[in-house]
Image (cartoon, rainbow, N blue to C red; front, side, top):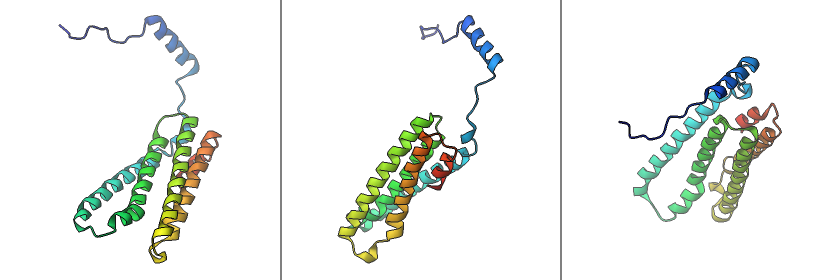
Length: 173
């Protein structure tokens, strides 16, 4: 005897006939073609970001034995942003591949873009106050991340407006 007491889910025959009639009349539901060409790109970007996040944790683990005074601040200032950027890339890839509506995708990308901008500005101000100018890389640590997060926020606006170039802006970011 079965330990399950409920019946399996089944459509009643009249509902099934109605659905078959709609499919016969209108054809199968259409798949949105705008994402077809981009699936592999976002899968590759997300997989790469996930792998690099794992590699950063391996480096953290191996470097713990060689701590010196002030290393926690340098790690927060120079290593943590890399981890944050790769994590945001992974989340962006998940948002882009997920079968969600354009408005939901726009909200998620907008939140990632705005949070990333706030984080980069915070790190830029923190590094300006606490490090020597020769330790800072203005282009790599500040300007490119700001440009990238601005492009992500722009891609969010393009998805909200359902523009045809929304994927291209997201890929450039």
